[in-house]
Length: 348
Image (cartoon, rainbow, N blue to C red):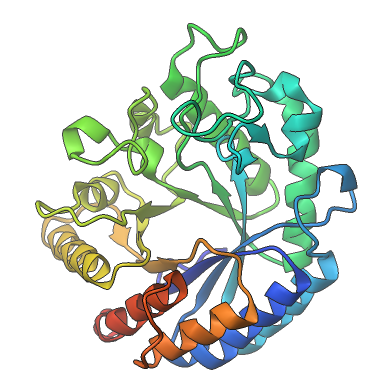
């Protein structure tokens, strides 16, 4: 189970190929483990044995097991991520991922053209009322979990835009639909003695908090935050904000007040990451002073590019304070370099 008693310093990344797993292992050994990172959220593009026709990458169970071996050796908790409900399409965004492409009855907004892009669509979602999808989703997630030998699974749930739109869902409360989905996922893993993590953005009111609609909800899902029978407080919340919000980040305080363990999650701009973390520490102080039921559990550095040897080399160079240019890999490395002294103080 997820250890809430120690500071979590995590790294999230995409990885799609066996070669990407090799690059990730190098990053763990040479960059992350020496800096005290103790959590890896691996969003893998898997080659499934249960449903090979729905595979979205070439990572095998054997590759995932290799990664699990290294994480165990280095004392790093491995948490696989499978995007649920939202993010059911890659670019072009109108083309669903293999499962929904072959089962269009699961698509929440089926009228979108396959070649549609933003702003006609962001990403597809699956229908939150059609439970037939779980006969596919659960075996695939279970296969990943078994290969990773994990006790915690990240179920995504971020950036859901399409909800309460299809004939099955129209007229239903988006918050109820979202909360119901979270409970179904939570209960599936709880029955196996596992915890879940999720991104927190759909539980936040974009208007009242001053966040844009990617990092908070504009479509009626945020009241699910208060449906405690469905959004249970044992869920670990990853609260991501990548832009600089000069007035602060009220979501961290909100999640702690609600009783969650929350992990602020940063991306690629060092100034923004440090600013966010500084405000998160304020929330930690307030939580202790006023006895709020939740806690600041640590932080997550995220990476949204599939790993290669070249990418990891530039990451490592920037992490070590070297000159690596202004490409995304270097920027992510610079964030880790800038956050390192902040992380050390938090661990103490």
